[in-house]
Amino acid sequence: MYAGKARAYTNIALIKYWGKKDEQLILPMNSSLSLTLDAFYTETSVYFGEALTEDTFFLDGKKQDLKQTAKISKFLDLVRQQQNISLFAKVESQNFVPTAAGLASSASGLAALAGACSVALNLHLSKTELSRLARRGSGSACRSIFGGFSEWQKGDSNQNSFAQQIPSNKWEDELAMVFVLVDDGVKDISSRDGMRRTVETSSFYSGWLETIDTDLETAKQAILEKDFIRLGEVTEANGLRMHGTTLAAVPPFTYWSPESLNVMQLVRTARQQGLPCYFTMDAGPNVKILVEKKNVTALTQFLAEHLSEKQLITAYAGPEIALIPLERLEEK
Ligand code: ADP
Ligand code: DP6
Image (cartoon, rainbow, N blue to C red; front, side):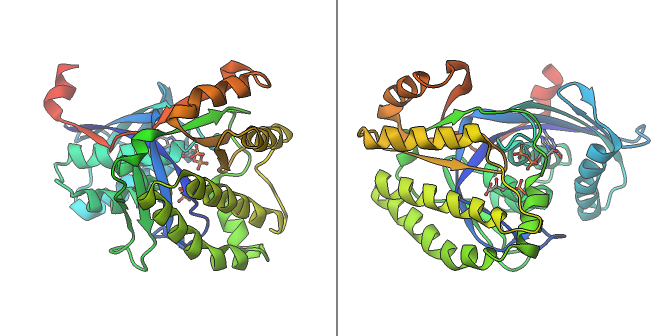
């Protein structure tokens, strides 16, 4: 039995990945930049064994159906092919993040799976190699290999499309992200399907591609200069543009709910009252608010006047992936 375990943290993109140019290899249309967070993560164990007769996938203790298991098998096939082995596997995963709710469970989930496979099969991968592998499971997962700020350079081949940590002089330690949970149920349109429909049909998609390089440069410069206002403004504008593309898709769709709009307005009001904070959203109705650590209390107090405190979760910059050695696994 080859066994391995990993813990990976979610990341939220400040400059979004939205659209693939190669569905098979998961090569993105654009580069992206994210912050890895400490509040949400996935722990995954993988066991490859001679005695196993099929792949099985347990998520939060529940055996998953054929469709979910097939996604895992597809990823395991890639690893098996690369390593020239044919053993089936049992995958046990625990999400400390709501699944498929736009809170990046696919990022932490697939990064943890890639990490667990690499431990189980003793692959000794560099962070770059691990990022490349995680990318094949879910694009955003390639960024969860790293702590702090991470940039996924789009590349144009399997070899040169991976994430890396970007220099920040540890500025991330002064930042926070407040999650406003509007709905943690499973969304109707996955990010994968949403971005595919947008690339194929949205007349606004070309506008997205035209502005993305400038947004990325602005964000990187803001990080270097520790310029919070600049980073916040470009984060909010970039997220809004991503969501704008979905409105022109055929058929059109949106991940926003009335509650999301309400929270966006609250963020604008907080800003007008002199509290610097900026929102971003992913493929789901929940809103994430970028704020400096020193202003977290002021922001959460302001939000709590209008929302239930139970809806608010504060996250800080999270660490890189943890690969958990076999000895420790056996101790458990
Ligand atoms: P999210 O916003 O949560 O990332 P997505 O629709 O992008 O939502 O991705 C959700 C999908 O990610 C799930 O349907 C499942 O296929 C996969 N996923 C989530 N958690 C895990 C996990 N722990 N292990 C493997 N795959 C996972
Ligand atoms: C809106 O990485 O979940 O969160 O590569 O198809 O698995 P696949 O998509 P996924 O998409 C994430 C989209 C996003 C923006 C981002 O995280 O950059």
